[in-house]
Length: 112
Image (cartoon, rainbow, N blue to C red; front, side, top):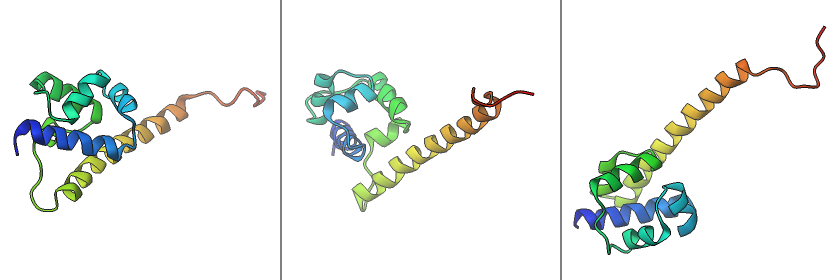
Protein backbone atom coordinates (compact mmCIF):
# COMPACT_ATOMS: atom_id res chain seq x y z
CA UNK A 1 0.00 0.00 0.00
CA UNK A 2 1.24 3.54 -0.75
CA UNK A 3 2.01 6.16 1.88
CA UNK A 4 -1.09 8.16 0.94
CA UNK A 5 -3.15 4.96 1.13
CA UNK A 6 -1.74 4.23 4.58
CA UNK A 7 -2.44 7.82 5.61
CA UNK A 8 -6.03 7.55 4.41
CA UNK A 9 -6.63 4.20 6.13
CA UNK A 10 -4.98 5.25 9.41
CA UNK A 11 -6.77 8.58 9.55
CA UNK A 12 -10.07 6.87 8.89
CA UNK A 13 -9.41 4.35 11.65
CA UNK A 14 -8.51 7.12 14.10
CA UNK A 15 -11.64 9.10 13.25
CA UNK A 16 -13.81 6.04 13.86
CA UNK A 17 -11.93 5.30 17.09
CA UNK A 18 -12.82 8.76 18.37
CA UNK A 19 -16.50 8.24 17.50
CA UNK A 20 -16.45 11.62 15.78
CA UNK A 21 -18.43 12.82 12.81
CA UNK A 22 -16.47 14.14 9.85
CA UNK A 23 -17.17 17.71 10.95
CA UNK A 24 -16.20 17.08 14.58
CA UNK A 25 -13.00 15.31 13.64
CA UNK A 26 -12.03 18.03 11.15
CA UNK A 27 -12.50 20.62 13.91
CA UNK A 28 -10.48 18.52 16.38
CA UNK A 29 -7.51 18.35 14.02
CA UNK A 30 -7.97 21.91 12.66
CA UNK A 31 -8.46 21.13 8.98
CA UNK A 32 -11.41 21.75 6.71
CA UNK A 33 -14.11 19.13 6.41
CA UNK A 34 -13.64 18.96 2.63
CA UNK A 35 -9.88 18.36 2.99
CA UNK A 36 -10.54 15.67 5.59
CA UNK A 37 -13.01 13.99 3.27
CA UNK A 38 -10.44 14.07 0.44
CA UNK A 39 -7.79 12.63 2.75
CA UNK A 40 -10.10 9.86 3.93
CA UNK A 41 -11.05 8.78 0.41
CA UNK A 42 -7.42 8.98 -0.76
CA UNK A 43 -7.94 11.67 -3.38
CA UNK A 44 -5.32 14.04 -1.95
CA UNK A 45 -1.63 13.76 -1.21
CA UNK A 46 -0.98 15.55 2.08
CA UNK A 47 2.21 17.54 2.48
CA UNK A 48 4.65 16.62 5.23
CA UNK A 49 3.58 19.77 7.07
CA UNK A 50 -0.03 18.59 6.97
CA UNK A 51 0.92 15.13 8.22
CA UNK A 52 2.93 16.71 11.05
CA UNK A 53 0.05 19.05 11.92
CA UNK A 54 -2.52 16.26 12.07
CA UNK A 55 -0.16 14.00 14.05
CA UNK A 56 0.40 16.80 16.56
CA UNK A 57 -3.34 17.35 16.96
CA UNK A 58 -3.91 13.60 17.44
CA UNK A 59 -0.87 13.35 19.73
CA UNK A 60 0.69 10.58 17.69
CA UNK A 61 3.95 10.42 15.76
CA UNK A 62 3.76 11.28 12.05
CA UNK A 63 5.13 7.85 11.12
CA UNK A 64 2.04 6.28 12.70
CA UNK A 65 -0.09 8.11 10.15
CA UNK A 66 2.07 7.03 7.21
CA UNK A 67 2.87 3.41 8.00
CA UNK A 68 0.59 0.52 8.59
CA UNK A 69 1.69 -2.21 10.99
CA UNK A 70 2.12 -5.72 9.67
CA UNK A 71 0.16 -8.62 11.13
CA UNK A 72 -3.11 -7.82 12.86
CA UNK A 73 -3.18 -4.33 11.36
CA UNK A 74 -6.12 -2.66 13.05
CA UNK A 75 -5.32 -4.17 16.44
CA UNK A 76 -1.73 -2.93 16.31
CA UNK A 77 -2.76 0.54 15.17
CA UNK A 78 -5.50 0.67 17.79
CA UNK A 79 -3.07 -0.26 20.56
CA UNK A 80 -0.53 2.40 19.58
CA UNK A 81 -3.20 5.08 19.12
CA UNK A 82 -4.89 4.40 22.43
CA UNK A 83 -1.56 4.23 24.27
CA UNK A 84 -0.87 7.74 23.03
CA UNK A 85 -4.34 8.91 24.08
CA UNK A 86 -3.88 7.33 27.52
CA UNK A 87 -0.51 9.03 27.88
CA UNK A 88 -2.09 12.39 27.09
CA UNK A 89 -4.86 11.73 29.63
CA UNK A 90 -2.29 10.90 32.30
CA UNK A 91 -0.46 14.18 31.62
CA UNK A 92 -3.71 16.13 31.83
CA UNK A 93 -4.73 14.43 35.08
CA UNK A 94 -1.34 15.22 36.61
CA UNK A 95 -1.66 18.85 35.52
CA UNK A 96 -5.14 19.06 37.04
CA UNK A 97 -3.87 17.66 40.35
CA UNK A 98 -1.15 20.30 40.41
CA UNK A 99 -3.65 23.06 39.61
CA UNK A 100 -6.01 21.86 42.34
CA UNK A 101 -3.22 22.31 44.89
CA UNK A 102 -2.92 25.97 43.97
CA UNK A 103 -6.59 26.83 43.53
CA UNK A 104 -8.25 28.60 46.46
CA UNK A 105 -10.89 26.77 48.46
CA UNK A 106 -14.46 27.13 47.22
CA UNK A 107 -16.08 30.51 47.81
CA UNK A 108 -18.49 29.01 50.36
CA UNK A 109 -15.72 28.13 52.80
CA UNK A 110 -15.35 30.55 55.71
CA UNK A 111 -12.08 32.13 56.68
CA UNK A 112 -11.23 32.64 60.37
